[in-house]
Length: 266
Image (tube, rainbow, N blue to C red):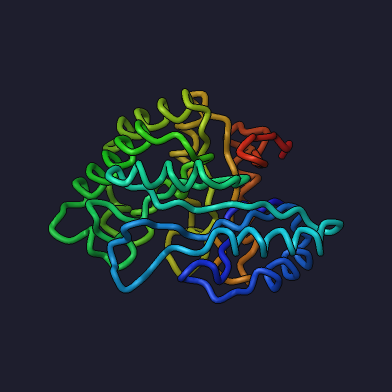
């Protein structure tokens, strides 16, 4: 059991204390966990600040590593909100601090929020895919300092009409994205939050067909994460997810330490 996408109260959208999360992870037989709290510079909602004191964050993680080192491995991660116009800021934070693992995620497109629905206004479902994937492509073309792309098809989480667009429509754009990250040896995350009932997706992010495309193009670096903001969802649906990943052809999942990856057989 390895959960590489977990949020604590260092993220603005979680109230969970790190130590409580660790205790629950141990109870659930999770052997490796990465705290990946949010930093989203220039987030579209000015009333929310997705930022925190990284020195304090590292201090608390080190304290817990020392306390629980015989029972669980704890990694210093980050979920970094990517946008094409803030590359300089992204490079500054990712170069300054010694993280083990960085998830690069897109929560804001065109400086509009996905979560609250602003992004989806005045667009056809096809335009929603086009603009989103073009933003992903332009950003990852110019930014390298991250380990995996997080929940790549996130826009499906918040829009039923987006889910209805056939995969064939946006497949070519995904191929361009995968060709870049495969060349850069950047991976993708398999995020199990979509399997939780509150989103109505009943599939991982990204979906099986996207993961198969990545595999067919030669991509092998994948991680698994619950995207937990509440300790009750740690390691959610991992057994089911590992089975279908293996059925696609993946033989290993990856873990990162000091931004270097290592394989663990499924």
